[in-house]
Length: 273
Image (cartoon, rainbow, N blue to C red; front, side, top):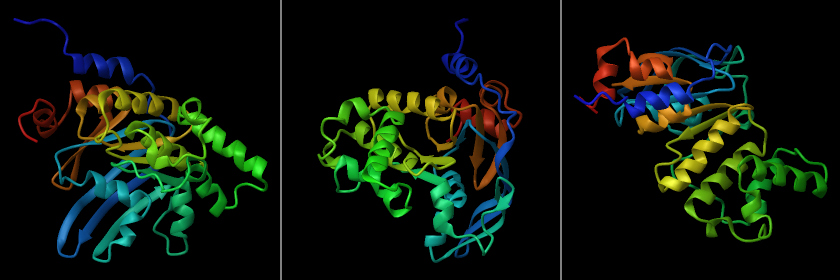
């Protein structure tokens, strides 16, 4: 009998050391999402602590990305979509009709599955948000924002001598870090990441995961991932979605080593999914 410890369990105990007892940054209660007649999310309730990484795991089509897009109201752009329930950020309802979704998205940045730099220079990719939001009063201030954002995204040393080159000319991993730099340039409070490493090789994936560990000290991060190993490595809290429901939410080591719901256990052990 092989008595060696499960590497997944080792990862969870080693990397999910930060407490998730921090106060909630995001509170969702009884969130339902409909695409026309299709009921995609069903009574989802979850608290997401500030300055930590929360992972959403579960089979394809279970509602992870749908819920992620509720947090910055990207579902508003889908004509057939209807969202019911309550999502609060710092105690304020983000679906309040008086709230400007553009201002919300300045607070809640998003990094997509496929790197999507603008067809502009590296500098202009990062400067775009600060320019349109009026965050700099001079070229010098904008230069500082661009440099600081690229440094936070662990990209400055690689691109500082070619800021006028096109962002689309970077490698896949560099493009994704450029997109992260572009996101944090407007100083959001929350960063949503939808499968940010699925198009990247293992080395680039490791760089993004290291970056998440650094960024979580200043930002609340929510990541959708199909990789349970990634969830174990990067997150302090994990939520398991299945068939539109949140089955279980808890500290990552508990979810992976001692889940309370059999469906979670079955998914983690590969019995379905």
